[in-house]
Image (cartoon, rainbow, N blue to C red; front, side, top):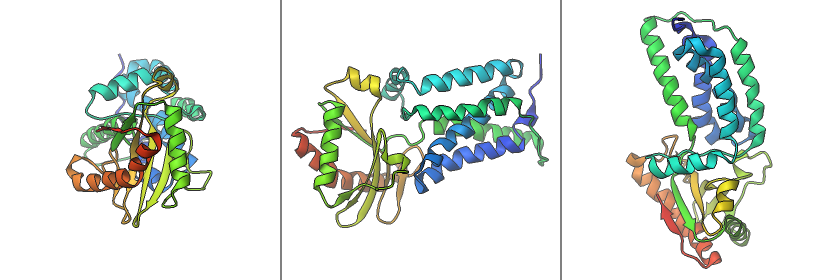
Length: 280
């Protein structure tokens, strides 16, 4: 039985990969919305996560990498919707993911990681450093699983298709609401929609549709959007998962959601002829 290789956790690549994972999800994605930041976490996570598993389970290295590969593939398929829905229903924090099959390109990180030989760096108090880095990495994996979380959701008794059509019409019909025109905006394509509301201060929001194709198909009379990111005119805010609007920052969260509801959700209600249901 092999002993744990502590050099994995204090290697340059593991430390850099962990920092990159954290910075990308909590800083870069907020500052730069593009395909690079959208996939960078997948590359970093797939490189260091099986390394972390191999530190914990040194006798099953090959299995660790195979399971990581299978898990990532399943996570990006509609079959994962049931797990996500169940988790979000019973858990105190939500997890979400984008159904984007181009993310599979990040799987190339696995063979690179598998063949990589960790080179440890010299650190004072080695045992303390190993434990500290291990804890930070574990927290990073957990906190970035859902990445942004949900600031607040709005449910409607209608189909996702009807809701999406109404959203586009509200945006097009109201000059105070605009969408970025950049084609490279990762958070303004697919399941995400990014808007600016200027009434008169300019607030920015990124929201997405709850669930995926399987969920939408099985719920023709229920659909929901939830706010992922929100910033006021002074740049205050962020995401629930990133700590920008957590429960102890209720004033910021309340201001952002009230502005969104007054200047967007109320118009969406009128367009649909329906009253939304708040989903905290």
